[in-house]
Image 1 (cartoon, rainbow over the protein chains, first blue to last red):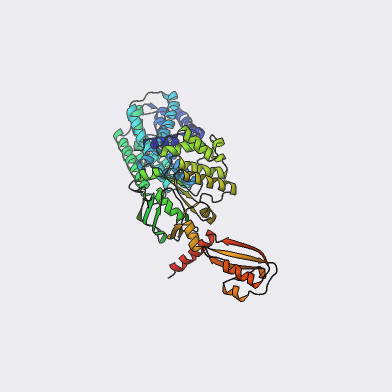
Image 2: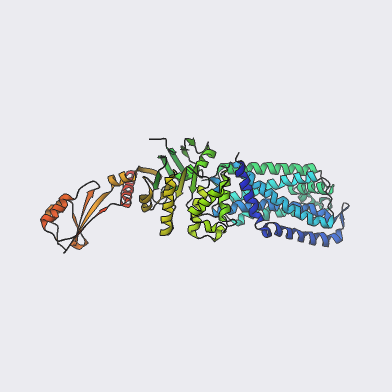
Length: 253
Length: 310
């Protein structure tokens, strides 16, 4: 194994996003803080509690999930896409790094960014709603799996994409709608039948619920469902990204 | 002949119906500078990209130091450095960081001495902490060469190294290529600048439409294919050539003010000069000019086109 090679690529990816913290860490933090303020405070004063949990505390796991998913995805997607655009992807392709090593380094750095943003978001939210986490190990495991899956999806999208618009396709048209309709801001059991049906057929809902269980100790559905979705997502996306990288599609002539 | 450093056998690359490389055989010898010469789209970049691992062959095999470039890619890529045609840079990082990252990908820790050496050799020492975005075009190109050298490759592929580069930088790059060669690095450069091949290479491989038309020592190629021309400038114009000179293949030039005679590279102009003296023509000046690689190249491509016709 080319250990130094993997460590170098990982460290390059880390430095890349840490060098522009305003864009990569601060901006998602502000967005989520705004969600938290607007939904948490304004709605919280009316809704007060969901199943015995204060509303602001109820929405926090979903917001953290949104932050982790978006940032893990965007890190690998924008980095690989920019490398393709600038031609620097050649530097990696001519090196003795294996496909698994390249993918591993990209995904690991993206997971770190996802968890970093998610972690800061949680700290900010928890300052208002309490720091207690019911099952921290499960929460970490779940977030690492979800972040790996979305980092691999980001890698796949960047491999395919020919424009920034295409890179933004997944977060804009898939992730955001699925998250908003995934019970981040509401409990499926409280929703009208149509929305309830829509929510329950949305895989992101199970991820949000599993994190809710891990953080709050309660959820509408058993956490096993969310963990299973995360496991399938991570394995599927990583396997697909590996297969595509190996095939050389759009990267190697 | 020693074992070649790079050995290419039956290498083909097809993109759909388009054949970029057609059953190419080529050996690159230890310590030489080989110029891969051909017009745009001839297949030069495809060929070196396959050896460097950027492109996959449709057929055939390529080995570096006896190891297959696909099966033993970790070994062969450590032995190969590629300077791509298009300059690339990552605007997030400085010159030094860029070089350190590139060495790291190859599993090499860049020692302070080696870093200094590369920075100085490529005249980038003053820019080591500069963001790559701030570099001039020439500096970016030199940084590309630096990146290809960080892991001390045995074979360096330079893809059109001086395309769009000014004369001074071109001379600098050539000098550096010669220095690398003197230290034992084998160098393959693709170029469509004949001057570059003529200046640097010991052997020339001419490639056109995916096929190698010829591989030969530059001197031998010039001697065999290239001839020389004698030009005699006359003191006053003459209306027509004396019969004896015409029989020797001489022709009038410059509106009758000069006479040109071609001869093979090893041929002699003695009889021509004797005939000139005998004819009593007013000789102003005499010069001989050897054919440049360019003319050889054009004649070869002409042959290749003729050979390729149905």
